[in-house]
Length: 306
Image (cartoon, rainbow, N blue to C red; front, side):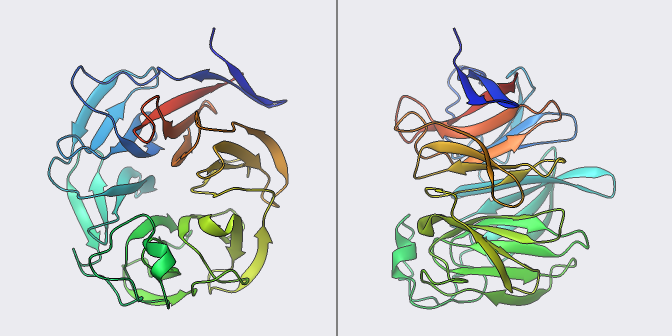
């Protein structure tokens, strides 16, 4: 029998075997997003099949992007001019790239392989590189995520080799950055995920400081959520202003209001540890990137709203 998690309105049936790739296709997921047709896109650390597409039932539809990526990190599908487009963050390439849903490259932001000066050694691509950041730098040094304001402005978290959020204009012109390494308000230790909420605020998952910091679009700090979060990684905010957060270091999934009040939480320990992505479809079902029985090899697990 499939387990039930969550509480109250936010109760889900877990389907750990939802994702059914073809035999021989290795899934090493790092991020997930859903398009307007409820097709589920998995950004996959597999050089031959980096973008995997499934239907809601977990049936494999297609893949694309072979040979284009070095170290996938984040995926976000957004609507532009009535069409879905796919934004992908390659952490080690130092780039954000926009594609059509069938894999045609439309735009690249960032220079492949070029790392800004933050004090991190140029040959350090490790997940602990954030500990070596001595000062904030420009775009990019091992970036992590991207979000879009209503006017098309772009906000990127630059986290593993930097400690900043960068703002770009809608036509991809660099505007400014904010953040320095540290634990004080407004500082970051691994800014890992970003989202623009309905109020126009910039939500930043300050992962290794175990908090969410909220800014206006000029970089002014507005508030901080701790809410007993342990390594918040990414966000999804639904049309009811409900915030879904995978806790990378805590092995949990938290559901909060836009004021940081907890609505539900589940998971604790190695089964859920290293949660690294989350998205919600039009049926209010959740898709969460979390480890399988092989430890850090991640897959996408489906949580069906009850």
